[in-house]
Image 1: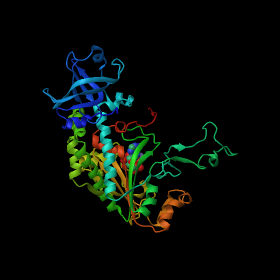
Image 2: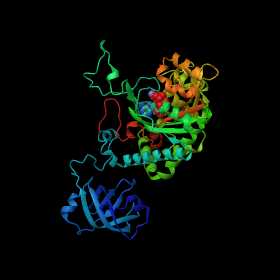
Image 3: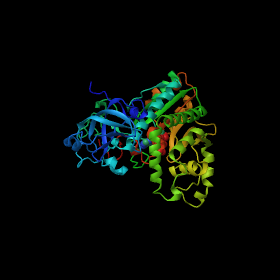
Image 4: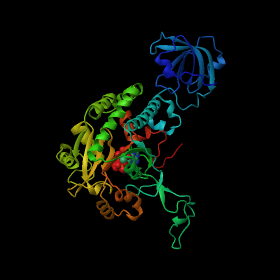
Length: 479
Ligand code: ATP
Ligand code: MN
């Protein structure tokens, strides 16, 4: 068998002292023709390999360059050097894959995140991205773990759909037509009857509507999959392809929804604090370094670990949209005209600067805002008795603003149909959705959490393009 290797994570954890083991990995650095730092991706730390001087051929030593892949067999011994407890005294060393030192783009020095984005196929080999993607895995696992333990059913919602859940129209079309010569009607319009699905289709923007169908039979469900938005927003918080977690619960109202979201966020953050401490410590140190570049008043008050522990240990602040508007209107920030979008009247959609003010300056903790004006929210949200607001909730997190958007859903058929007509949603095409309200409708609620926004929060990274392996954004679909 080729792969009898021991992972470096296990080696460093301790059991193999004075035993012969084989490790495989990639060279990070090679000093004095004697000390190799090898990383195999199982942990942020490297294993130090010691080559006895004179024992290995000059021709082999020349091939041990940054980026090369090695297979080393040797005895694990206690290390006398600083920085590591153990090291591997090599008996056999083999180069599995050479790496031309002149051409390998990742030299052992600090590279900018912008540069690394351009070589996203290689950035996995850096400490920063190793940490990020191990945490991404852990969070994904914790998400399934949380819902599974609570008895939720994981629902695979479709990726190709004929509905645009939000009615926002920012979708990617799916077609098998040749774009240069689609089938046309006599009047020159496109004849979708001839297209693959016999009607216009697009990549999903959300799995919520399908999750509602399943919740009204299975009780509690969640989706966790990719979603797509063709919004032309070139920001550090938007991707064209991102992952969403969307739980949906039957027999639940807005308060149940908030409770679930808060418990969920605390659970998954506790999970990584417990299981990814080494990677988090590395990213925390990285963030502290970055912050030193900033002027004093722009630095965050808490370190990364402190911030995560704070979220786990404190209740989220809950208030209504109306109360939030009052706070914003009366803030000195607003009075001094320091908001790009001044807060003047009830009804406005909150901008990210407003959300961040509430979270970072006013409450200094995550905030759940509820009961938004119905005009700025989706058709399926349940109308409150005041006739003006809907039972919506957004969770705002420090550093990034909106991280969760959710609501109690409108379960009353007549109210829902009326709202859909007002908002010009094609009621007839949505008959499948309305059937849930026709046959055994119940109060139900759910939310959507953007996985990469959560990743930003947990890793302390500032650009969403750095927390997904291969980011998709305007004018970019590399790799
Ligand atoms: P925003 O105002 O930030 O654009 P939104 O109101 O469009 O968000 P929703 O439609 O409520 O967001 O989507 C649910 C969640 O998905 C959001 O809370 C956010 O975490 C995430 N999200 C939305 N759009 C994107 C995007 N383009 N890239 C990454 N995550 C996103
Ligand atoms: Mn948006």
